[in-house]
Image (cartoon, rainbow, N blue to C red; front, side, top):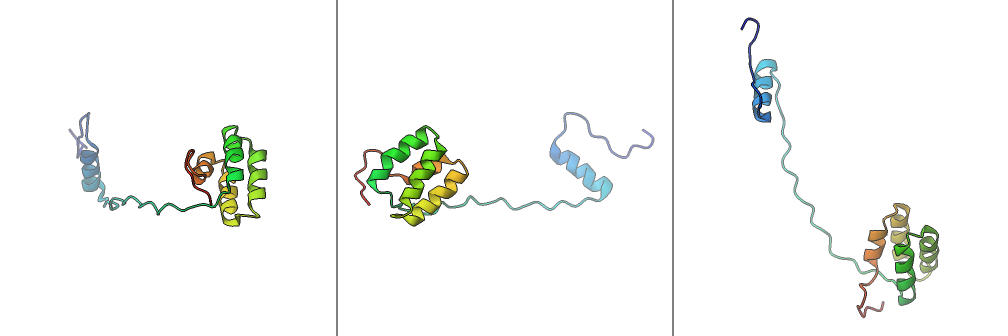
Length: 111
């Protein structure tokens, strides 16, 4: 065929297309090294007094932002670091993260 330097029939593999582009256009590809999965940090213990646990669970289940924020504000006087983290997650509407900060139901953890 006149004027045709390369032909790539269908179906083709991505590898074949990239090779033809490399030859025809002189394109050089830089491939990223595979990313290693981040290792999860060790679990952090959060100080959540028992009086806040059930009300927070109920507010989270209802997705009631006003109640969640009010409880976090009340918590800030006794556990400021925990309250700060919860406030961040509440701002992201990340109820699951806040829930993960609470002691597991049935556990006898008392901070």
